[in-house]
Image (cartoon, rainbow, N blue to C red; front, side, top):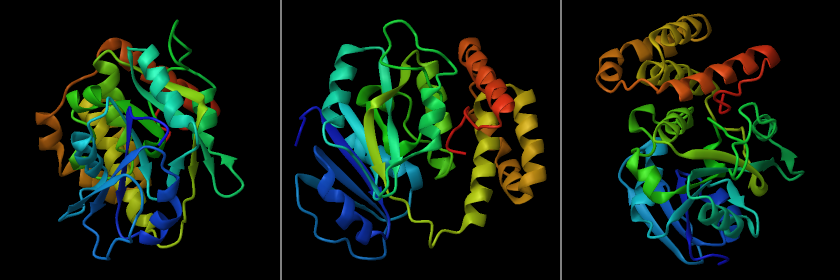
Length: 286
């Protein structure tokens, strides 16, 4: 354990083999949230707590871990990722020195050859600049397995929205933290190793959920014109995902909270950057 100020929350489902590879690398107290697995969990050593959910809650399973944590900061990891030595302690120190910061995103190195994830390069380019005194460049998107959050700020905005389930759930959380007045920063000195395996995933189902979530997120927070644009794009690229979103228009209308102008302006700036470079920086999960 390199810090007592951070809890690592890991959500997993039916991937015990990956946990055996990554779990020993966690260097802080860890809460493992089993997302309704129908396979037994392996025996895992270390200072950890295991929570077994009776159902698959998607990204919202992480909320359970954050609620149980008793540290001021919580880092997320997937069952195929871990924070490199020293990164958690450095992140805790940065959050102590930057009280306005609610979220820090680390650099992600993918695979055994530690290739830089393109999302990290997009955030390092700092299209939104770096505010004076901030921990790093401002961001409005991230990969969930590579962030550390201030626990009270995360809980105050409700964490990950259960209705979005998985794939693209990060965008709404980023918007809500920024709306609450917090800084979200990319810090290149923090490093996460990620070892994804593409086999076994239903890419068609993922694309459908991603399309739905882009539309729903726009309906929940963006101007109606932006929501219409996202729906129109989804109707072309993934009509089934668009139809899934339309079926939830009533829910989205009841929970709609438009963004304040400064946050919307930053998102539009990111949209312009994405259009110019053909890179999805306003929601880098996609």
